[in-house]
Length: 507
Image 1: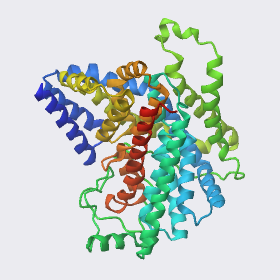
Image 2: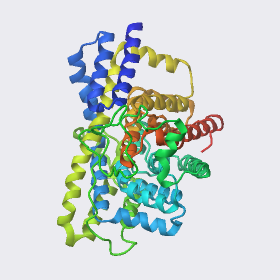
Image 3: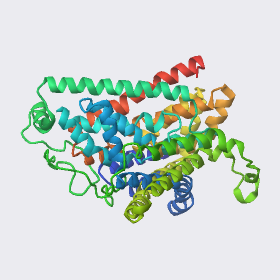
């Protein structure tokens, strides 16, 4: 049994190492699975075809519509010029001198409106770069500022977020995307507020030292006493970049990433059209939110779903599917609205559909591969010992859910993959434990989702690597701020809220 436990630990270490070294997760996860199987003495081929692949396929089956529609929607928003128009509208309202706030708010609006996280990163970088240049804010803060808007509260905390991280807990706890709105809103204020305070503190500190927009590389060299800036151990999935590679100079424009070598990135389309006014671009975002809200709280509950009891539907319940169905309907309505608003330019939108379909493939299969790895690890005998030891500690269901999700998200470097692995392994037991202990399943939904959005952004995270590539920065230049706003602050927020809910039962 000790050998099996050692195998699990080594397989986790291998998965982290391979991902950090730039190997696509879709390949690294099966390799790491083999290590766990060898040490446990389990059959490799049978485990791959009968455990790994069904788990991967089940994840794709459940979430493919969200990935596909999100990617298409994001690229259509880019191709129509809507995304850029939204950014400029927000900037006009907030003011270009408030570049930090304008960047966070614009990124958050797009993410909460249903645009894929990675598409938002591609869209926001050139706009944020111009805002930071006008305000003369150090360039190294761009990745952290964008990350605060897309990788934190709009992904997991805001009630009704159409991002997949907010939908996964509902599959296990029978909740919907609007679960525990009080916790979500407080968490949003804490993460967003503290994140902005940190970024403003960093801006003032760096500028007080004489660093300006164009000085990032020289400033980094001075800090480290070096004459040549190197990658400092940071690793990318892109070609020609790796340990020891020279840092790009300030004129480098990483506006595109090779998606074949980077499974976490999504392609973008250049803006082809010009919106008729500043109001129209907001309509598709409002459509996603409004339809999602209406379906979840009013339309679906009012319909007759008795036919779901038929054998051909597998006995699925509305509560298990409402969250995904609502977001799917919302994104579909938004895509149709974009087409309707651009009927004269339908031919120009074709590229958005093609690139969106291609861009959805690698991200969902990469995450599904991580889920398959988790299923393989959960199938070995040693894992049952670890699982039973966790539950035999008699801990609170909420704390157990938050802790297990945080750990697996940290290991995989993925919020959605880590959360799915944890809930596939513990979800049923956690739900039963919560019911027995009187713990709110809605609170557990919200805090579990928020926990997934904390330790997932350790340096080996594909999301972090992609964002740094897009912005032309390295870990040494910008990870300190990314880590603070997407890891430290969210983890502290979740810890505080989990403690309050556990001891007071509030919310």
